[in-house]
Length: 218
Image (cartoon, rainbow, N blue to C red; front, top):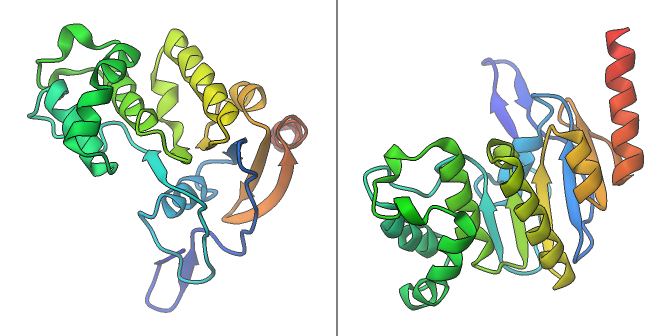
């Protein structure tokens, strides 16, 4: 992926990055701000398309990349469940069948008839994440948004990830919470300045990344 930096110079947000995510695993992307994590995630979610190379996804994918993405602020929580569900590929009948589960998981029952413009960022995330996971995709792509939720919701999300991978589904997500990455991921890719620095076991690679950050400060 590249963006025009000047008339004479191209800036590549991500370049020469290649890896394979095993089915049924939770895979993390780590790296400093500006390393290309979110760009890569948006490319995996088919929001961006690569200028070079290819991306192959085996199965359906749902993404939760930004707080409030796929929601209309003037619509109620109820209406946005149907809207977001349709964006993610569900029919109205399918959303109706999953509606109670979506609401229960999100924990926004008391605010369901309010416009989501009145929701806190945490409520946005809980509802958006709940819709995404209940579409039951083969691949779930999640950006840093889970950091907005409280501890109880993060634990609920962790359990959902385990349930997903136990069903042979795959989770790909970005987080700066490195303890969370080590706890939740099987493998990670470490990006640096738009290139792949290392990919491998989540704990080992994350600890080397943490050490690199410490060495840089000394």
